[in-house]
Length: 274
Ligand SMILES: O=P(O)(O)OC[C@H]1O[C@H](O[C@H]2O[C@H](CO)[C@@H](O)[C@H](O)[C@H]2O)[C@H](O)[C@@H](O)[C@@H]1O
Image (cartoon, rainbow, N blue to C red; front, side, top):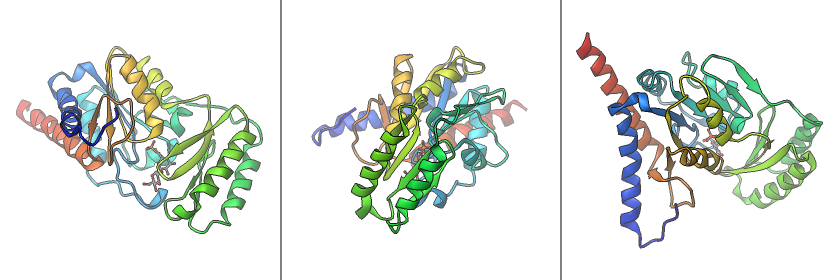
């Protein structure tokens, strides 16, 4: 989806349709499977990876929607699985971490790609290098490593050059992943799209139509698979971005408001039935 400045109406139509798709979940919940990215989608972007705030009602909202969908709700994130899981307290949703390199299915089984090569030594070299860039934060995620320049944008070019170099050194089992003010080296034999496909091959996702919601480049792989399978893809857009998503919502707060309404409707329906 690409917007020209003079296509405001088209943009508004698309933005509205993101909400319409999500509200459709309430009409026929048995039809849909929902795949949600975390940073920039469910949670507002912060200055640092650890600086995020999970709105207090979000875990329970997701739990309500997961129940509405018969469990067919999964989180699909670039974060390490363990870190992302802990954000939601006692709620343990099916989840794919590290852009699909690790995944916990609905049954609780965890699958993880094998470490390959001397990745630990490479991570040390990146960490050493980053010490020369005040404000650049290195996030060691186990099978992946990210260099964040949000607090030091003046180092963007150096970070790009060095991470590109180390991604080449890491070999074909790894790739450079660009993101929002971050460069990351992560396993190449995984993607959010393949994670979505894997979830859809298992209960309770099997046979349902996917709705994928995300905000960043890594989410495009998930959008591609959702589109391919006849589902919907919703891009959270702060600015007009190039995306293959078929619809959009303006912000993470907008998405949370819609999810909150769906959760309230479910709670009310439960009360009315009792
Ligand atoms: O796939 P996601 O759940 O969207 O995760 C993508 C990356 O998110 C995090 O970085 C981004 O969010 C940070 C906190 O808001 C922000 O400071 C940073 O600039 C963003 O790039 C996370 O730290 C990464 O590991 C994820 O890959």
